[in-house]
Length: 193
Length: 180
Image (cartoon, rainbow over all chains, first blue to last red; front, side, top):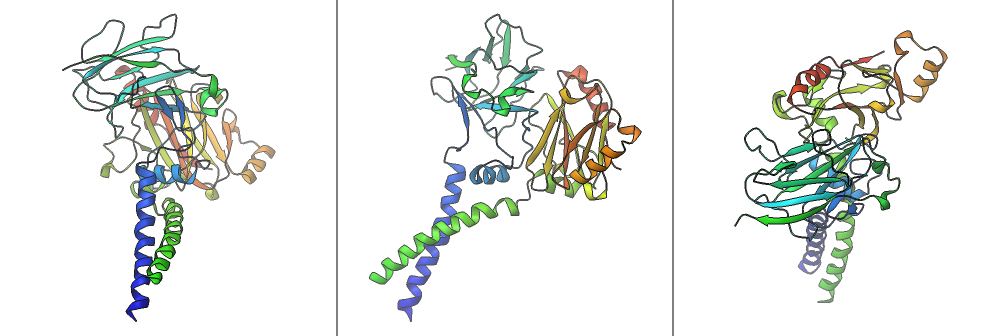
């Protein structure tokens, strides 16, 4: 009796436990499959659409949310700088380079769960294309604790962060010419000790 | 011993089956999608401004600090959906989510004739009927053919700075979702 029941229980335990853990690990740890990566920036053009693969869809379902549609725009996030080091709130960064064509774009700093960082005084760590000084050769933005001339993204606090760059009404989101687009570099220029 | 080895192999096959089952069942049992969360706070065709101050705080809100949004649920079996709002905002866009919270359609104000939001969502059959005889109030509308009957229409506005808050607030407050 025990000789049949014990192996059966073992098989069931392995199947249920292993199945649950493997799904959890795929959703939590594994990198997304259909990500669009340009330099330090990552976007998920299919997130939250019927075209997404089953893993992206399950991941999206766990988080909920209201992703942008293809005609609305596309959101890029960066959690690391161009040298591969994790972005930190106590560090200063220079974002420079060109952006794909879009009607407008926004840039804000958020914690790793996606909530925007608190403002420094009345200045929120958020910029958009209609409030920045344009440079002839693209954009140049300084993200730091300390005020910087020209375009300043006011960071505050300590710990890890991500940058979210959203392009609105852009051909990028409909995946036309995706391999030719360029995004700004994120270069660390210093850190508070 | 052989018996346990056999059980282990059986278990590993089971891992695959359970893995795939959980993966495909997750979306069906989700309660965090926009449709489910809106269903618990508002009636169909009721416009909800998606802000953290909505009672219960259960509606999804745009994370982007420059965006404001409002949404309503609709059911095309009750008639064509007419979404309207007036005002001058720098950018608006509208997305349609199905009852699983997936984004199935979106347009931006580039498609509109003027500054106002005036969109008609209709099923294929309703669209045919509309083509035969266009009601006068739809003369300026953007037409969207929808493959789904039940869904959520969600409108996003770009709010460049605080001086636009009142304009954007008024735009979302006067947004109407009506069956016709």
